Length: 102
Image 1 (cartoon, rainbow, N blue to C red):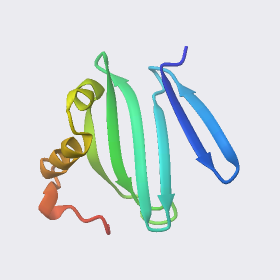
Image 2 (image 1 turned 60 degrees about the horizontal axis):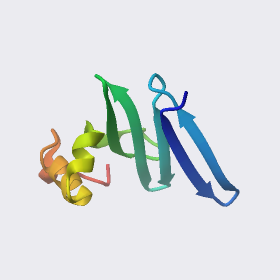
Image 3 (image 1 turned 180 degrees about the vertical axis):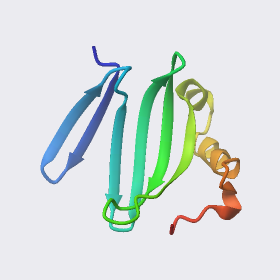
Image 4 (image 1 turned 30 degrees about the vertical axis):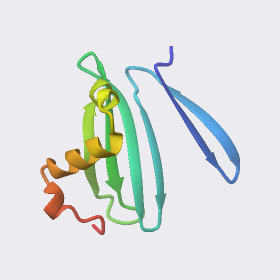
């Protein structure tokens, strides 16, 4: 049975995909300049949200993790953008070392 759902829409219309607790679900959107990968997976009895900045697949395939937290924590925060900003500031790369050009 599906635990996760994803919708995407582009020039050829819309599509929906499903994921289980075992498979999780991943969505990527990017341009030639880079993009984002959103993953939702079930870990340690909880759903986790992972957000990464990614390179275009034809380039280096490097990524920077912006957020990796249980969804319940992200949901309970009054400002998702503030939560993500704090995640960047406290990430191993840190805000001063974060380079979206990489």
